[in-house]
Length: 362
Image 1 (tube, rainbow, N blue to C red):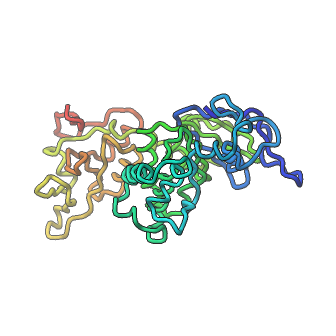
Image 2 (image 1 turned 45 degrees about the horizontal axis):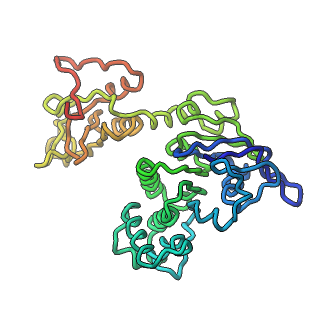
Image 3 (image 1 turned 90 degrees about the vertical axis):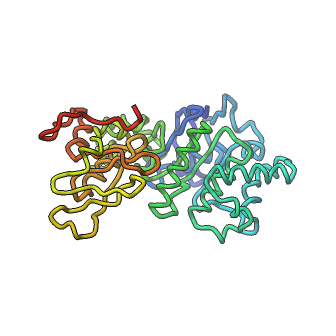
């Protein structure tokens, strides 16, 4: 656990960056600090590895005041990921990842073997090991940065807006990767961002900060979105916080109709390829036209927000439920998705006597 006990930072010119912070970061969980620029997020993060020294109060790591630990030793036991990865341009990828193991005295063979393991763990191809950072895309560089932070298996991971310098598609992929890694590794993660959507997606608990590092609200994502502490927090969360909340709810509650009944929807017919994957919706009034897109969702892994978005985009007014291999298992119309939002059972379609189909094989 990380504990901030009245931690404060006053600069020599008298400017107060952080004022008397009291905050616990639970072990094995992800805590996100979010707030406007200049509210002290990065200062708080850097107090943990002594890149910033508090001028008052303490920062405790598993009960030990970090100021009593040698800075170099402390930092080698804490993973640190920043914007744009911060890789050494003159070192190959594999040696960038092995940086901390080298500093800890690991022999070259062991360090490189660990780096190769992590390259695979963060979803990068083995052949990238011999490349230099400039030969990688921005998203690949960030993955290397995460791998480097994990190289010595530190219990604590500090992440300072690590995904803010990449495009939205790559950013979403990196967030997915972090969620997957954290599900396997259970690190104590302190994550800084200015993006509330990223905060509620990644955090087990989210601290919304005001100026001088003061906590406006500390809560789990669902509570934060549904019960903001005050008007200031509600304004920061944005007017679409209800839609963001849908990103926290599982899509498995959507009632899916089996393919036999769900392939036709109000003048549209779903077409599948030989493997059962959807290829598009055919307008039965214009059967000679090319198929229209068939948006899909994965009931077992997607959120209600994803299902609702797909249903809105579908020309047939229905979304296709697919399994892990992309094969269609059924469809759900917009009414079924909306019913899942409220918890009410969807109204049966005229002439139908069958209920929803299970998508988990039962």
